[in-house]
Amino acid sequence: MSQAPEHPWPPRYYEADGETYSPTALSRSPWDMRAIAGGPVSALLAIGAEDSVLAVDFEIARFQVDIFGKVPNQPLTMSGEVLRDGRQTKLHRITLLADAKPVAQAHVLRVRRLAAPIFEVPHDYPDPETIPVQEGPRSARMAGAITLRRVLGGPGIPGRGVSWLSMEGEVIGGQTPSNFVKACLFADFGNGFGNATNAGEWSYANLDITIQFLRMPLGNWFLLDAETHMAGNGHGTARNVFADEQGVYARGFQTIFVAPGHLSESSPQSPR
Image (cartoon, rainbow, N blue to C red; front, side, top):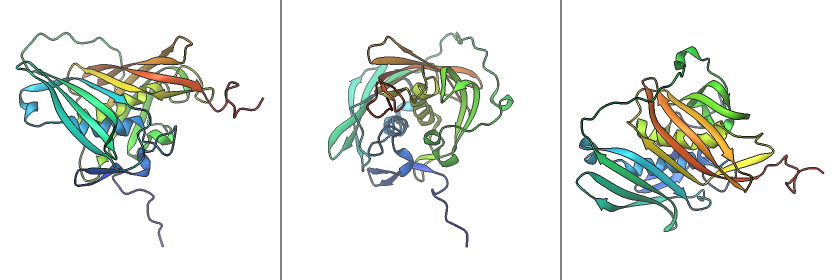
């Protein structure tokens, strides 16, 4: 008798019951199994930020996530409010709640769509099809739904990391995620794909995510160009550039909390 698959296909981060979202095992944080990882948090908030009516005349120019400590691995709900309702710009706040307590939020800046000059960001990224598919970290593979093509460096390799990523899974079971939602998921990967040192020596927990969109991404492949910088004082930044096969579509940053890893001589668990 064949064994049942460990996860349903397509894999998903949440199951929805009305307006309640229960995380699956795939959403767990690599830092704490009792918490949810930043990528699934960002992706769920992105779904809450989508508005088909506003999308007719306005484009999302900035998506900014703040994570209030650890987002617990338990059923979540979302609420939204309008902070600015202007003719040219609109600002909304989407809040993620656990037991009615805010655990994360996203500020979504929309700008009215107008015809304007184009000044593209120069780049020399190779086409994804020219790069072989490779294994990625287990926590980022989404039970096989996320595919990785490394261009430079990557998870587990200190220094700048450039990788093509695709995602065939679901954020919420039964719903096909938009490219905006996928982009917000991958925006959390910068601190892992462009880590500054060996992950066993130092860990980089993500505190926030900022994406400034030039436009929405196109196609199935998303490029992440990430690099982490630190000043030796317990925090740092991950600088991210995001591209698709048409070119650069966004830039971003993450603030990261830097702490000794399990192999660090500064860690109480490491051998002396």
